[in-house]
Length: 134
Image (cartoon, rainbow, N blue to C red; front, side, top):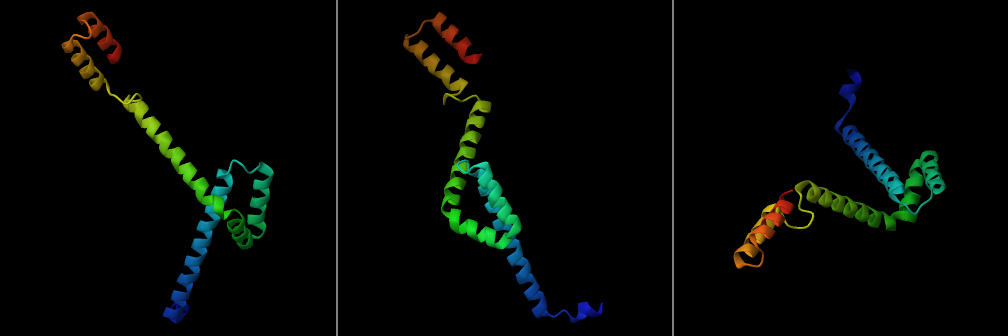
C-alpha cells in the first residue's frame, strides 16, 4: 500500500500516455497484418518475409511497411469494403426475392394492368400469374 500512496498524478498521466501509445501501436500492427493478407498481388513468400520482419523488428517493421506500402493500403481497404457491400446487397436481394428489381406483388400488378388493357388474355394472365408466384 505504501507504493500506491507514492504514485502521484504525474506518474499516472505518464503511465496513461505510454499505455495509449502502446495501444495505438498494437492497432497499427494489426492493421498492417490485415492489409498484408488482404493484398492478393503479393506472393506467399513476400508475406512471410514481411511477417518475419514484424516479429523480429516490430516497431521498425511496421514503420517501414507503412512507408513502403502505405499508398496501397487505402485502395485495398476501399476495394474490400466495396466487395463486402456488393456481397451484402446481393445476399439481401436473393433472400428478399427481388433479384430482378421487382417484387412478386409488382409483377402481379403489372400483369393485371396488361389484362385490363386487353394486351393479354385470361389464360395468359393465369399462366403468367402462376409463373410469377411460384
